[in-house]
Image (cartoon, rainbow, N blue to C red; front, side):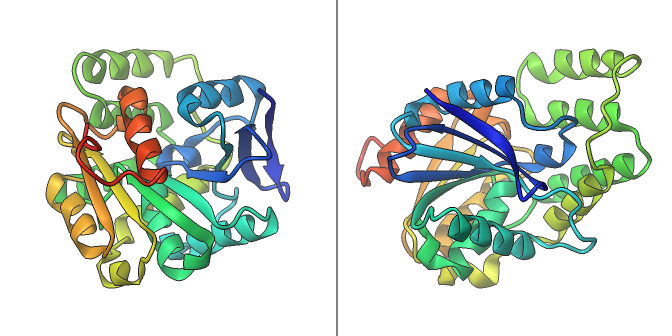
Length: 277
């Protein structure tokens, strides 16, 4: 499998793998994209190809947000930028997977640029953050503004993971923070991205989404609780809900094989019994 990666226009990180001659699949990553410390590299490309190996017969693009986001950028503004990428790279109509913050952006992408989106999967996101999620992202924004990067990364792991990982990993990250610099490539992007998530509320535009939409989430997601997830599913005319018992916000990495199987079947047109995990 060929791996391609780099910076589109010198500003936007991307990874590409799979079959370049096949139908396009565009993945919009989560808030962690704003906390990346290094430029795209082969090791990360290989890891992503493994994470999404169920789609190795597709032309898969994992596209980040541009570096140096303007202050005040909203999830709707960011969606317009993704529409530009899809147009410039001649990827439309594409199946789109939006994860966490990427799922927020993907809602506006599908609503405002419907011709570009064939089918949509919103993973680990809802119409808006829950109350606990708002408190958490506000805390991350404050820590980022103070440059306390190891604390942000550790707390993100604590909130997103489940089980033993939610207690062990944060402690290891905080210990590593004494010798490892967790400062992202563009620190201001972390603050702008947190603010965009906090201000996101898509309830008024859900009726504009015509693409068949899969809403997939962990039942134990603390950032986007089940009522917010169901609100998204109920607001889109052609939507299917897949809830994963025992999974939290890190669904895409904690249950990749099961999740990818559900998404793959949905993109292939399966809508009946057996879709749910």
